[in-house]
Image (cartoon, rainbow, N blue to C red):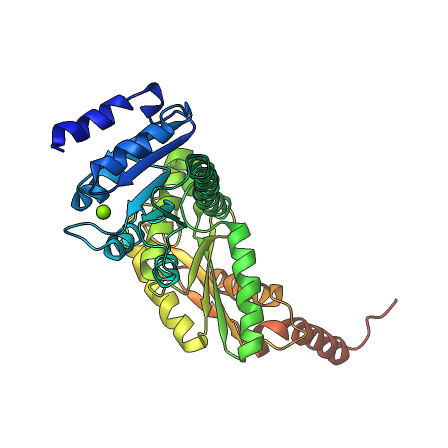
Length: 371
Ligand SMILES: [Mg+2]
């Protein structure tokens, strides 16, 4: 038989079902003998739901399978150029054909050969020429389970894609909800979350944790004199300068309030935090944002409160914020454009000191006379 005769066999089955979106079974027969192909074609000819395609040359089988996309492959075992077992292996190792069920059509009714074929992932084994009714039943059964499996795979794939999209959207939402809209750095919510989790870690690991609270000096007169748009630009530039100055990815720069910023430094003791505070002060000063209404300098400057501690169980994270806030207050009192470090004797005990001072004065002066 010449290739023209092969074409004829295929042409005779060129029915509407040949279109890829039609339901039903699509059978690809790989067999070197056209006489077998003709016999199979006749067996299937009256079945409207079964489309039949023939491949005489096994070296073309993979390519033809990729084009035709069968739901079942019928495969001969004895062919001139290629061993049937080798072709089975090919089908199974090629991504496009791996899952397509292969029904082996063999002249041998040998249990050892059958066993080896099943080892190589053949789905079924029929001795040539099979009974027509049985062949059709097996083609339909294998085709159905293949289509069902394919649908499940596609549904899972779509689910995985959806899941990934959802994860990306969630990450984006989190980023948006934790970012300050004006300056692009962390917002107050992010600050609170980060401080809380780093506080807990520092307790677990007995490691130091530092916080720098930052306030732009004389920001109100800046806003009042240059306008809100310039005020916003100033906030953006200071935020950028702070973000530039804080180099470790483990540190957090956040907008704490209106013109207040904060830097959280995990695993950092006082010395490290002081060094960074000075670097940030220089960085902001170097912006040289003109500020004619500042009594501190002729450009925008910042004041900072630095607090460091090794937190203990029972202490709460806001205590560190309170400490930094007290130190910030002292930096402003001391003339701004500087940082102050929180110290137990100067800040926490201040109230007691003042009380003691008052009492000693009262005692020295003697009680005020009611007369
Ligand atoms: Mg043969």
